[in-house]
Image 1 (cartoon, rainbow, N blue to C red):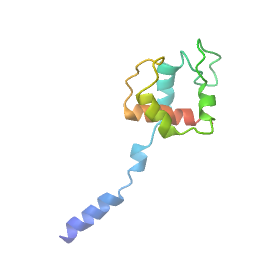
Image 2: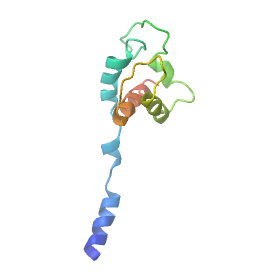
Image 3: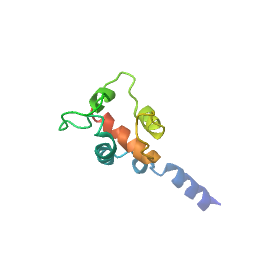
Image 4: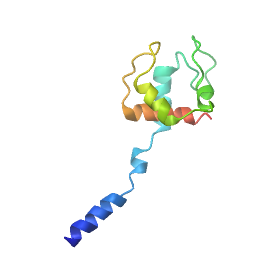
Length: 101
């Protein structure tokens, strides 16, 4: 019994945050693939073909939240393509946008 209690305590203390952390590098890859046609997604990009806000503008909004952006990306507005992002990919993309603050 004592051994199972120690195992349970060890599992509860196991650091899970780094394994679940969003990956902004993958987010940048996704942005270049899915978003660059309409949004400015990097400093190297000079323009777009639409009126979509540049990612730095999105990141600097006072109400910006990575979580809210990731949630939005799972069910985007009608003008956006259906990217069929996974939750992890949406979080990665939101993390990349957050790097532009």
